[in-house]
Amino acid sequence: MKKSIQLEDLDCANCAAKFENAVAAIDGVQRVTVSFMAQKMILEAPDDRFDEILKQVVKTAKKVVPDCTVILK
Figure 1: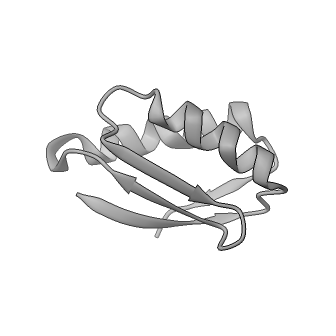
Figure 2: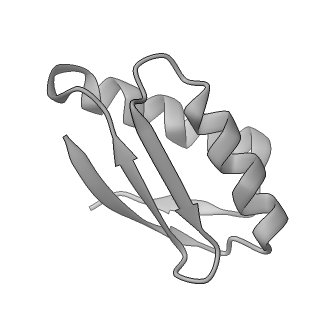
């Protein structure tokens, strides 16, 4: 599954790169792209584990970029 996820308050391109690298290291993530300019993340992961991986992404965001919020709809 590939999904675009809105981010809020991602401060800089360096923060986006750190967040992208941290998310890419999560087991099961097939591909991830984080855009500072668009304030969004494109996440690709297996359908059957997507929700579990997304929860880990939110936890990772709080550690790596604490001011950034992952907007889940």
